[in-house]
Image (cartoon, rainbow, N blue to C red; front, side, top):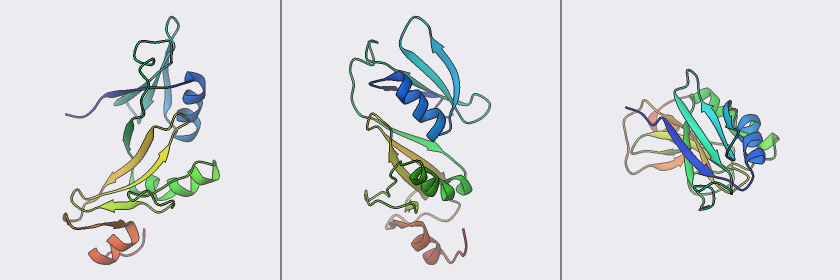
Length: 153
């Protein structure tokens, strides 16, 4: 099993649509012509979808900030921080410290980088790592690599 879709309430569907297409690099799926809703594909082969619900929709009128995690490859994660920062999107680690370097949560283990969309929703790019879990570890990817005896990126 896997998560197929998630939905976010947004203040302006066109602003959010542009952010998710241009910055996050999702793909356009469909815009409902009768309701203020945009659907975007996450990844290839229509494996996952994001729905953006404008303020005039039932779901969109109940606005609250959410968290969305998108699985990416390690190479995509390693380049994401600098790319997002060039596009004027601030990135941060698990401790909410501004950085372009992914952090690692050891119990999974996973590497991730966080940023916010125009509505303040937290977006996480995440990569599951192959090393053995270490429930005590939370820190930078470079620190994780030193602890696990890896080199390079």
